[in-house]
Length: 204
Image (cartoon, rainbow, N blue to C red; front, side):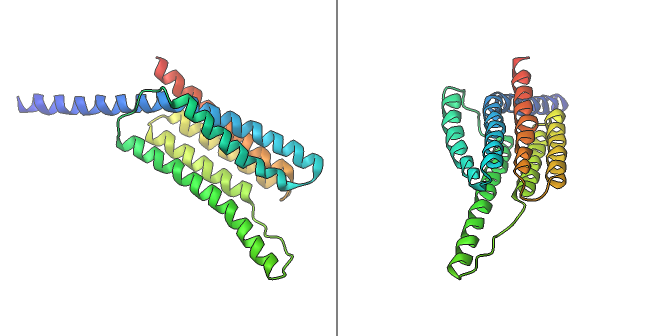
């Protein structure tokens, strides 16, 4: 009887975790597709405008994209069933929250450093391969998300996207507008495709 109770308890725990993963996948699929499409489209627009005008200031469009994505996510998720709190949900939330914090923070720090140098009369330009750093960060977060959700296809998509994005950044001259297309690769392969996979998982 004790063995039966232990087996039942393990089965209930396993089923609860699986239901939690399915609920998270259901609520994550559409936002991932939205953000992936926005990242892909924005990077292509920035590349085209940057290449045409020669000004990297078009990168400020990322802030506009973030605002559009936040609004779109709100409308997509407002009628979704609330996912019960779980360790899986907490980990995924922390992973992407801190990615956003470090991504925006790094970009802001570049501006702060440039302003400090300018105030000191130094006209030198602060240079850092932001595309390479953010590509690695985004790919890592995607791979971790797939591992947490126990979805190898999502992890594989993130790894492949990261390899392709990093290769593009390394093969293209530093400072070239073409480097921004690394985010189009990540948006399509590491966000849109996993979003579709999540959606298919919940419709089975």
